[in-house]
Length: 220
Image (tube, rainbow, N blue to C red; front, side):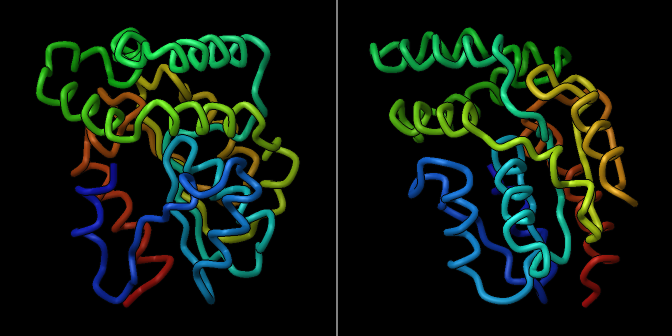
């Protein structure tokens, strides 16, 4: 998911991708493990569930977070309609019907302008397939039980970049606008012709915005 971003990160920053999402079963536990894994100040960049994780880590240790980049995510707790959809997907995953679920949800992952981009679709399906059904079940359950980040993000005082695709059907732009409005001084960027999987769909644009923001948050 971050293969196009890691090589572009500034050399003076120790950029890495956390694996706490495969070691813990709930976002508070993931955030606690993340903070234990890495000493000192942190700049956290998370997409989708990773953004929820980043906000939870900032709630647990605001004094250690120098900056947050939140990509295609939501600060709201789960609503009942979406919970029902996730629970139905979990049942299908448990029945061995993962491919059926992924194919049905493929149009939600990317902007409608990418409907014929077979290479992008296959790269996405291969990435999700490597995670496997059990990990997808665990992540859906973690998202279902996520905390209400709107209750605390208004207290954040670190620099925050909120980045979202204008065509994001899973965490629509109004969710990002809500986050940016709640956090004093947050910067909101909406990418045109981009959906939910923005690090895959528009890697160059994502990198450009991250690098510009990082130059301000953590100059070399």
